[in-house]
Length: 346
Image (cartoon, rainbow, N blue to C red; front, top):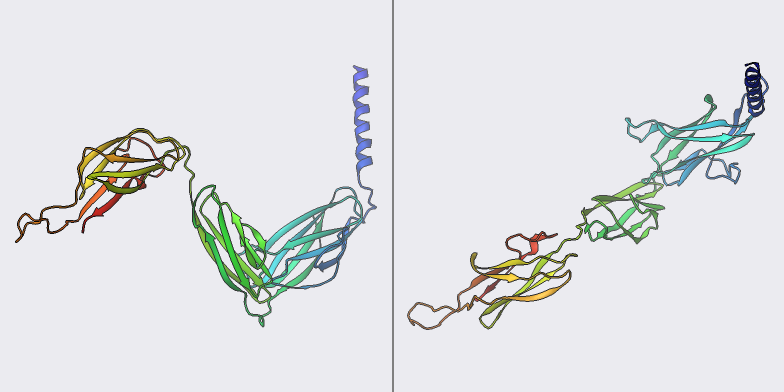
């Protein structure tokens, strides 16, 4: 029993020594601090500022802030909060725009970045507030300016082709804008040139917004792409043509689906009255075939009853319609194209 107690005490002592070795040796009253806050357009490799500026514009790509951390030890946590103060932003908007964090193990520089929104920065006054290990530190302010002397960008064109697709199909976006310093299309493809095209593949109904930004402000345009769910493994029987062959009515049907059809019945209608039926054998995916109503003898000519009794003096118009899969026995991806009609005569 005594041996076990001695072993546990040794373990505790070793653990305590390990913690002391890993702890930060900071003299009393000299906690880590932040100095040299600098707003800049970019950083060097060690996060030192490349320049100094407190005025930015609506078309600035980003706002950067560099700071020097002194008295840092292992796992010193530095936080930067980007705060909106006043300006053109809606009053109900959250004043905390973004929160950045970094860790320093020794004295170092940290750099935090506020990227521009897709529609450009909103004009107004802002502040970035620093803290170290949860203790409030210094802050610095900056402004986003609007150049009212510069006219707004002009969106010349913004189109999608096609605007209705089945999920998985591509859509070509085309656009052109003038008097702009930056173009952004959301939700994709993001930042692009002032003129160009890009292929996107939305999986659901999507509204695309194009933002054109310059120092004077932002112009925007929207378009919608409607996306239908992809249909898997179904036939699609489509009638494409109806004509006479002698006194027999023939029709052309194609299976445009991706699965073979089943055997079905086709029906023939004269002026909306059914006059004949035709058995149609299965069609493979992509197969096209000519069918005919062999049991129905058709002629659009009828005797004209009048002063010339019995003489074929005219041709009466007659509407003929053929519908495949007329009993709905074969499940299709698009049953709306099963019928085809044509008017014969005058």
